[in-house]
Image 1 (spheres, rainbow, N blue to C red):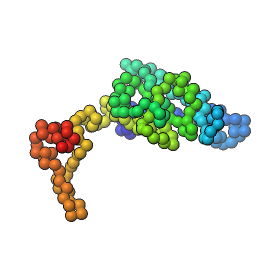
Image 2 (image 1 turned 120 degrees about the vertical axis):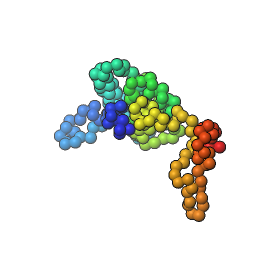
Image 3 (image 1 turned 45 degrees about the horizontal axis):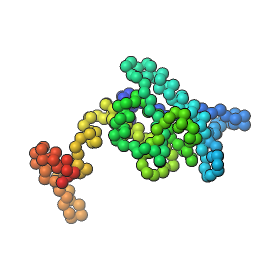
Length: 212
């Protein structure tokens, strides 16, 4: 990812809702005011909820910057995908990542914190609910990083060799390298003979059948 960003194949930017709220009168006198972006949930319950307006302004700012940046690039049509991370969302898969990379020029990922984000944000932007798995994490940062990594690697130029895309080639989950015989605690572990045979047809068959 670092190499792809450095080579300007992809671009990753971060936007903080706190940058889009104003300090209160009491906060203005402080050197670094704590800019509040959350409130207690209607209907009661534990935790705090991220307010709609700061998040809306954040997304709007991201969209404007995307449009301005793409207008400077020739032959780049702007198509923005907005993803709303939620444990109950549609399961994120490699196939989803491929379609996203092929169809959209830019992706905005909305990361929740605390008890979540005011639902009206998702409705306003018609964001698609996506989950990286049937579990709950503290915030959306880790799921966002997983999505960024998976979608980015589908873009030409991100990987040094397009053949590095394991999902696009026939491959067993079993892989080996030197030494041919590994000795550990008195036991020898050998590389499967077929991989040493030089017979590419048999090797491909072995890989197709999951190393059997």
